[in-house]
Amino acid sequence: MIGLYVHVPFCVKKCRYCDFPSYSGVESYIDAYVDAVCREISLFPRGEQADTVYFGGGTPSLLRAGQIGSIMKCIEAHFDIAADAEITVEANPDSVSCQYVRELAALGINRMSLGIQSFDDGMLRFLGRVHTADEGKRAVQAVWDGGVRNISIDLMYGLPGQTEEMVRADMEVLASLPVCHASIYSLIVEEHTPLWDDLRKGRCLLPNDEEIEQMGQAVHRAMHRLGFSHYEISSYAKDGCLSRHNCKYWQYEPYVGFGPSAHSFYHDERWANIANIPLYIRKAGREDAAAERVVIDRNRAVEDYCFLALRMRKGIDYADFRQRFGCSVEDEFADVLHRLLAQKMLEATPAGCRMTALGRDYGNYVFSQFIRE
Picture 1 (cartoon, rainbow, N blue to C red):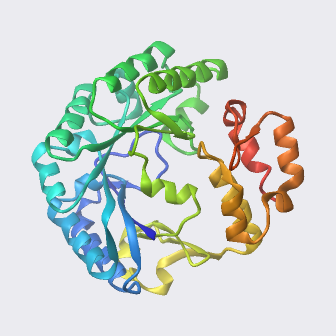
Picture 2 (tube, rainbow, N blue to C red):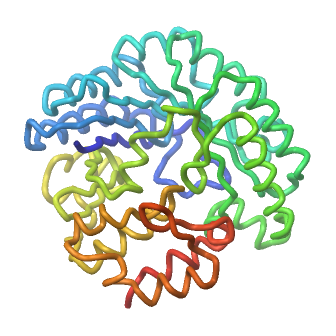
Picture 3 (cartoon, rainbow, N blue to C red):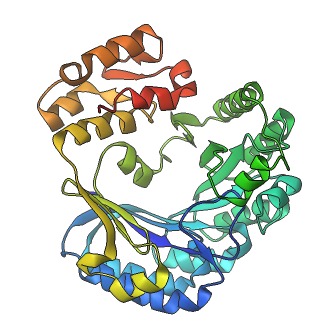
C-alpha cells in the first residue's frame, strides 16, 4: 500500500532555523489552497490502496478542522483507505486545543505530531518559536484529552547556548507527558536562514562536537530508560508506535504528495510540486505542476534503497533486497560492505547488516559510500 502526504505550507511565523517550504503572512490563500489540493487529489487515478495519510508542514493545525475534513473527504473518495490507516496531523502548540483535537478525531485523525522543539523558554525564544514551554506541555495534554492517544513530539539538541543539563531537563519533561513517539534531532544549520546568518557573523556559537555527542548520548540513555526503542537515526517509539508513514520513506515504499512543494515516489518516478503557492493554486493537478520529475533507474534505486534502509535500526534486509532487485547486496556493494564492516561502521545482523553506534555518529560518511558516481 502507498502513503499519502499533504503539505500545508502556512506558518504563523517562520522559525529562525527553518529552510522548509513554508510561508508566513499568506493565510489569505488558505481557502484557495484547500480547493487546489482537492483538485490535485481528484485528478489522481482512483482506487490505489493507502494505509497512511500525513498532513505535514508548515503548520497543518492552522487549517480549520472542517478544511482538513474537506481534504480527507476527497482522499477517501479517490483512494481505498485501509481500515487501520495511520492518519497524522502535525501541529504547533500555539494552534492546538482540546476541542480542535476532538474535531480532528471525529474525522478519523488518530495520530498527532507536535513541533515542540524545546521545553526551555530561552531556547524557544532563540529559535523564534511562538509558544512557551508551558504551552508545549499543555498542548500534549490537550491532544490526549481530545481523544488522540498516538502522540509524537519533535525536540532538538545541539543548539547555541544549550547544555547537556538542559537536554536532560527536556528528557525529564518528556517523561512526564503521555507521548509514545519522539523525533529528536541534532540541529543542522541550513544556509541562508537567520540562524545561519547569526552564526556566520559570530552573534552566537554552536556547542562543540564533543558536547553535541554528549547531548545525543544523554538523549539515547533517557529514551532507553523510558522504554522507547531507537528505531531510526532521530526517531524513538514505544511498542506499536513507530511512524508508519515515515517508515515508508526509509523502507523504499511508494508515497504520493499533494500541495505546494510536496514530493512523491511512485512507479519508479520521483517528482516535486512547485513551491510557489499562487502558482501551485493555478496549476494544481496539471502535468506542469511538477517542478522536477526524475525516473529512477536501477542503479539509483539500489543506492537509494541501501542508504535509506541504513537510517533504520534494523538496517538492510538482504532477502528483501534480493526480492526487489534480483541480486544480492554483495553483488552490488561487496567492496563497500567489506570496508564498512572492517571500519566497524556496519555490523552483521541475522537478516543483513546495520550501522553500529560508530556508524551512526558518521552517518553521512556511511551513506556516501553507497552513492556511485
